[in-house]
Amino acid sequence: MMEMEILGINFGCVLSSLGEGKFPEKGCLLPLISRILGYCIVAASTTVKLPQIHKILKHNSVRGLSGVAFELEVVGYTIALAYCLHNGLPFSAYGELFFLLIQAIILVAIIYYYSQPLGTMTWIRALLYCAIAPTILAGQIDPTLFEALYASQHAIFFIARVPQIWKNFKNKDTGELSLLTCLMNFAGSVVRVFTSMQENAPTSVIMGSVLGIATNGTILSQILLYQRPKDAKKEKKVQ
Image 1 (cartoon, rainbow, N blue to C red):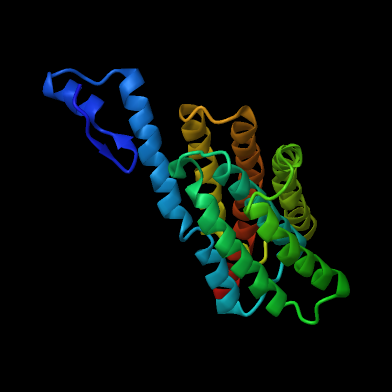
Image 2: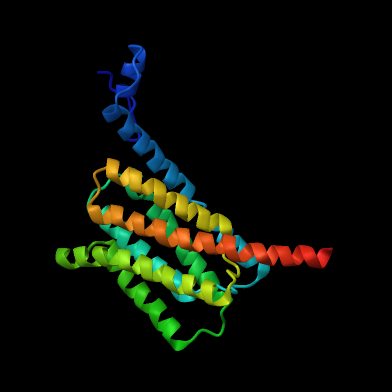
């Protein structure tokens, strides 16, 4: 069999089949698709939160955004990235977490800037994160505790979405939430389920992506539901 590997992606199996005039078998084609999609997610993750950041800066407002929800996202990304790093998963299986974490931290900083004055508890949460995050990312904690933290990060991501979902429902408005960012989050969760299964990732990793589909899908549907009437009202005023 021909060996042709680029960025951990083995094209040899597929090229050999095509060279023989045969369509690649499932066991040959699916891993290739999984790796390619994995790198596509990583590439897309470098910009996934930029529409949200741009919308806040454009309107100089964080109206309708739940600060706690975005803070919890930072915590969840930190735990997930640390776990994947220290368990030797291929970069294509988790690379987006690195870029999402950086963007999430920037986003929280912007939310803090537009939410002045900040309360005491907000400062305490920020300082605690800065003190503990380096230790978690370095993997310098008890392995049992590490596993428990990783198991909890799925709950953290779920809980992170709940305040935003509730705020949207209560206000019947999604404020400055970015449709494009939410759409990319939802699509990323869908694709990640497939790639995680192909990479034989732990069940907990796959379930995390399934929860992401449910929560991101809910927020996406709220944006579509609550922003349409608003646009309609504007059109009526113009007429």
